[in-house]
Length: 100
View: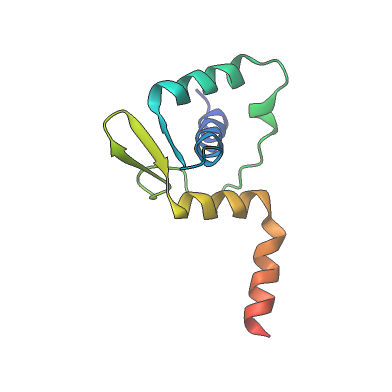
């Protein structure tokens, strides 16, 4: 698996978890959702914007936790990471507001 695909899969996992009301899902359900995304012919994985200076380890960087065996949950850090990626210009606005 290439590095870009691995990063795209990590981003997909974060988005899957963020779409759940409690941010938590079983690993089996995440795998099913990923297989649908990967098998789709619309190129979703290739279209994901993943900045090279962003965290790359879901668990090591604290973006996802394992609250129970076989379950993953997106953390507040994971939600913030998604907001950064999806709205990169908002970071500049937040900095300007804090400064002024």
